[in-house]
Image (cartoon, rainbow, N blue to C red; front, side):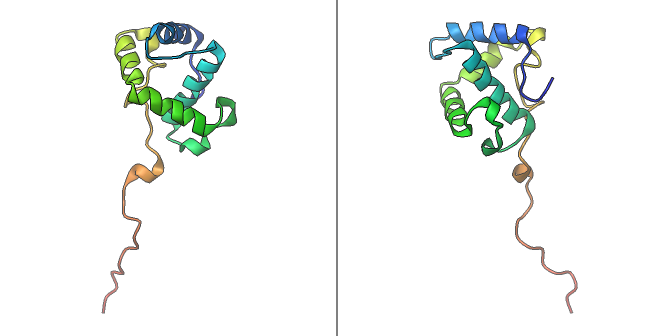
Length: 118
């Protein structure tokens, strides 16, 4: 499975959850899937939003929708809903699969002082 792709059986469960959720406009299934898979691609690769492949939509639109769902706690509710479903282990992301972008690795961006002092 590639970084963002969700298996069909898992997607059916996710879409059913999203369609029934009172705070989500799921819209057309193919558009909703493209959005969710775009979010998965970002989280699994640790890439910046601007690096989102065009196949998932415009990065800024995907980010704004992601942020809206985050603010309404949709992601957390979906995680809680599917946490015990073994068939959903690859579709529901948690800290074991989310990658940090390389700029989050820490370390100073300042130059290191020379150790060859006289």
